[in-house]
Image 1: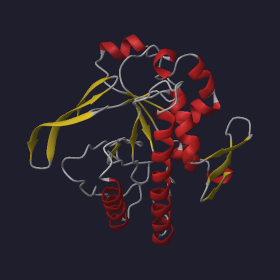
Image 2: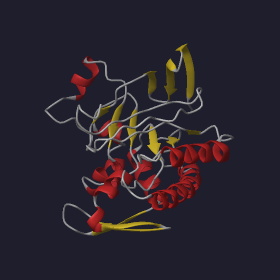
Image 3: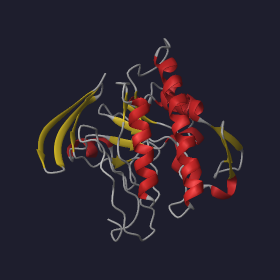
Image 4: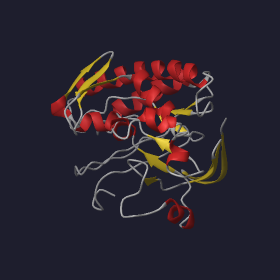
Length: 258
């Protein structure tokens, strides 16, 4: 399955390795983003090998829209589709649904929204996100989450956190089912929880504790620390996860944010 080993620590800094079915990732690590299974700028898979890329990130929503996750599965999964043998992380689609604010409707069962390409109606909930990511066959799947605005009011964010926590349980159940099916491409697909990108630190800490208290007994759910920066200028201090947990910080935005 997977193994996370701390190699060196110094204060809160840490050096580790994360072993997966598709290879070992040395952390800290930069994940190259290939939204639709390709890096922009005519960067080939061979280029990624040559620059030492350890893990590639692809986008669940965009691959679902085109070419279609079922087509990718028929072709043998993302690894064969992009001729890549090392780990791949697929996001849940939650951030993209967030970005389609004018085209979406969020309910407990999931999110109804319209394709940004042709406007056709799409429904995505925890189960659908897991099914799409299972079809893609990535090394690591992200739990489906609601990604509220970084400046949403506290009451909304609290409700969003609670909903995302309930969705995590549904993701876990669905992934266990999918990993047991005979035609599943990657039966060792891992599930990562997601932390919201809101600036209210107390809500974030509450969510992390809820994840850890409710899910810490499950070896197949890891708790990465995610911070999405989307161009909004604000000061933000990441609350610390338990030190033995794996931290990932994908960042979107400009150099000023970083």
